Image (cartoon, helix red, strand yellow):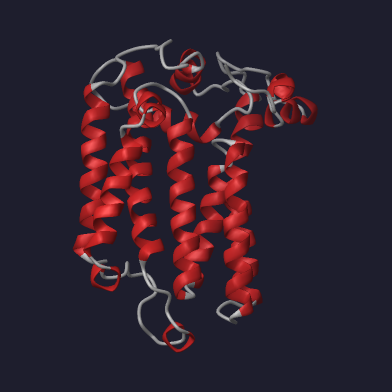
Length: 279
């Protein structure tokens, strides 16, 4: 990977992370629409089950963060949102560089050139790097991204997965890289265990797969492998019934039966608000 592309993305992400940590909530937060902060902190600290849809990935990451030996437990878990926010900034910058890069012709796609390399900025020019850096910072310090990166919430982790999936899908489509398509499929399955809104990214993975298949860059093996890795990533959702059977201190909905598990996973408690508009 050329240092210029990675450098621009890394600098933007590190700058965002520094600001996020400086403004990070030291405890439970109610500002910035952080009404979910309390139960997410409690679920992560006790290896419990948060409000529907359970958010097992965030809970597990929060649990790992809670073991870091500095600061209050809430501060440590809040760091997950800050790190995820910085990751979303990083992948947004890479996505902009990728979209600005020229498409490889069929002969180049079939060549042995490493499909995992980020394109040299010489291909798309310095303006692409400047645009990527500017777009990443504009997003990083927007009200929505900043406010959700300083408290225990699942949205920055969702944004990080979205950015990574879109980048991998665009990379696969541009270069014919089957491994980037497989990576996107795995990230989609894993990311869905954090938030179901990531289903929207499935369209990008599907379109990339169809385009690669039409160019014969992938075959049945890669398609099956992508599906298997998608399912493998999504199996993290099994944390919910397995942990519920252990009767943790914090267990929203107690999904220890198929019916209760579906109630949590489907977000039945909030069904009336799925298509509602905020203030």
